[in-house]
Picture 1 (cartoon, rainbow, N blue to C red):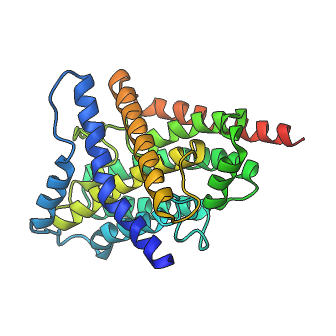
Picture 2: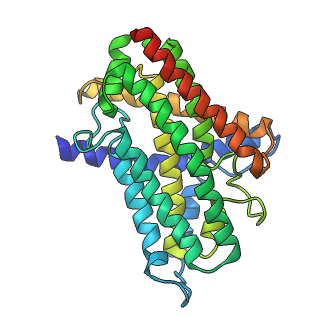
Picture 3: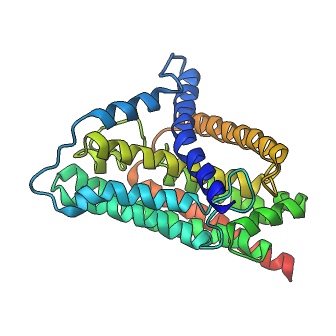
Length: 313
């Protein structure tokens, strides 16, 4: 059963992630009164990149070539520790939410090194900005998640989701609501969304994530974009199943899994449309104002942690 659940989880991550990205782009186009690309456009883009030749500069080291595979593998490994359809993820026994955060950080670290390795000025700019944002986003993420973990009595992702299911209205408590608000801000930063970054632009002076990918072509570029969409799906899954755990299956019964799949898709669609609304209703922040936004996220997570201590006291 462990192998079956792992295979199902991998298929969900690699096949569903590009669709969520396409839905966000289509929703943004709708709110901006334009036609926009189809929801399956990213599948076509990945197929196109995969079939093109991979060119690597002679000035790069092994880090540049290894970064796409390390990033994709780290994100996929983290995905096997995050509940999607069933409360118990396939690798839930091997790591908790701390391992998920550090696996995502590992992928980001290699991406930043690859941006610097090519010797491109804009790649170095994107890498430095990415690490600056992550230095502020990761503490905010950890504080908010620790508040929820304290409420659940465990840092294991499956235990946190099961606690939300058993607690009924616990997901509507002040601790969960404050942590949710903080993590929503972190989600925009971690997925490179407006107002922190703009994934649809290649303006050299404003891009962060895309700046690190300018030197990549072919299969390596496909892996980088695919990993970014999977990471986005993981962040959405954390928000959906920790704070809205209703519908998550307790076991692998056929009816339970089908119901959980429908609930999971509905929650992802809601989050995708919410991100599209935020992106179309706000402007991209100046880089020097991003710390203020992430500082607010950290404060909300800290308040959630304090709220949980007060409730326990």
